[in-house]
Length: 93
Image (cartoon, rainbow, N blue to C red; front, top):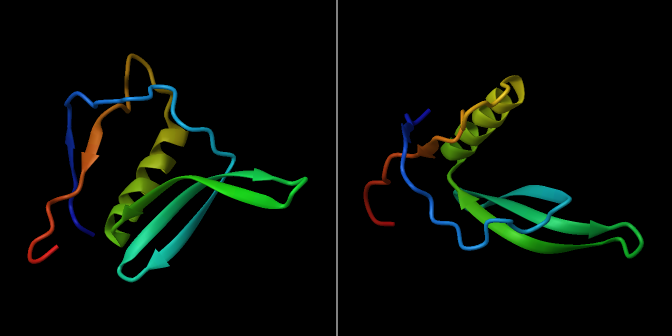
């Protein structure tokens, strides 16, 4: 797996509240992974996409690992707020 680094830097947030989602899906799109966050309504049996994130398969592994770690921790004093950064891709992007 590609090595990530953890950095401490300010994160610019336009909407600090975020967008509500009550469902998600994970899909492959060529070499990338799409993480779709949606609002699902059972009454209409429909979902509306609220946010889509495109990541590399390696970074998806980092996300999964960090989520599992966060579930096992009790964050205090901003613990777990580090920014996880994948190394830059080489070649044509």
